[in-house]
Amino acid sequence: MTKELKFVDTTLRDGTQSLWAAESRIGMVEAVAEELDQAGFEVVEVPLMPYNFKKIARELKEDPWLLADIVAEKMPNAKKAFMGEPGLVLFELLETPPSVAKLFYDLLIERGALNRVQTMANIFGNLKTDFPWFLPYLRSKGMEIAHAIAYSISPRHTDEYFAEKTKEVVKNKPDIIYFKDAAGLLTVESLRRLLPIIIENSNGIPVEFHGHCTTGIADELYVEAMKLGVRTLHTGIPPLANGSGQPSVLTTIANAKYLNLDHNLDIERIQRISERLMVVAKTDNLPIGAPLEYDYSQYIHQVPGGVISNLRHQLQAMNLQNRVDEVVEESIRIRAELGYPVMITPYSQFMVTQAAINVATGERYKVVIDELIQFAAGIYSEDSGYLMMDQNLKDKFLSLPRAKELHYEPVADIPIKKLKEQFGGPTLSDEEFMLRYIMKGTKDIVEMRKAGPYRQYFSASTPIVQLLDKLSKQPSITHVQIQGRDSSLILTNN
Image (cartoon, rainbow, N blue to C red; front, side):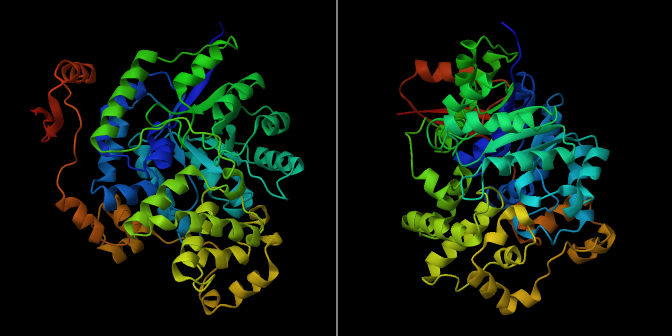
């Protein structure tokens, strides 16, 4: 068989975001990084976006720069990637000075933790004109650039739209184009219609496919994508596959065999990674991804799995977990009123955040997030859909007192030296400054450091196969504890 297939592994980034509310602990990544590096993946997504930094420092009480060092050290060969943008934080696209964004990328690239940046073509319009510094900067650093064309269903997302969007993307000269179905909305029929349009207009740029299992048919879509000529697929490793994440790489290669397509993956290594992640899931009581039944509601609300995962997590923290359905229903109304933005980062977060506020306050748009005011002013380009926005709602947003306080153009660049003065002084290391900038001060960082060393899951001298063998031979064992930085194993009997 021809070894044509290549794979982008999404386990640690999209997998954890879709299934575990982005819970990528340092010890978990450390436990599988070397195996992932040598498993034969074309690309491995890593959880090092600024969003991950916030999650890791604030909630997991771990040092994200240590995670970056471990990724660089233990994955020297893999092409490492994440979703990137000109701004650092989703809700601060305009507020991030280019000097800060460049420093963040520099710190990851220079330590060897990043090789590829995946951008969202449906969000920023033409990156050459909207953020003219971004793509030249990434190219100057030797980054592979992958532009995602995100699928969506609405009155304005026609076949012609996707043809024109592909032509627009080609003008940016990315290395890769990938068709991204973040909310799991594609059907076999729509894929057969649209994927050839994207490939035809790609001007020879390789096209990858990225789907989610949210509606229960992603495995079938991956087979169809292979039939249509796609040779690079985005997949996850169980337990961080299926559910609202990507299809399992194991299922995908099993199906590919019957299309006479082969691969260069090391299946034994992938099985070991899966076994280790399964222990992490059970240790921390995290969901184990499983195939979902067909869910037609996904085609109505179109909220991506990662957003739903984090919404449930955050509403539970506020003791509002019983109102998830209300928030989702409200997001449907908001999307129509806004002109049908594609339901993908950051639009999906904007709409769900506003929906949660509307539900919590009991009054629609009593409080309006800044990003929707800016959205109404058109800062996200014509492609966002704002030209179809309900005119009365647009007028309401733009007449709010807050609208006069906001700005609608990217901020002027500011030297890092000057910014450091606001966060502790010129002697701050670049890493410490960046962490304080992302976390908006030192409070969360102090709490993170109080928590002590990160938790390790396995001893380097205790392979997971030995651990599982011990457990299978001793049914009286009811508890497994990894103790201390040396990760000594404690087996507790009944």
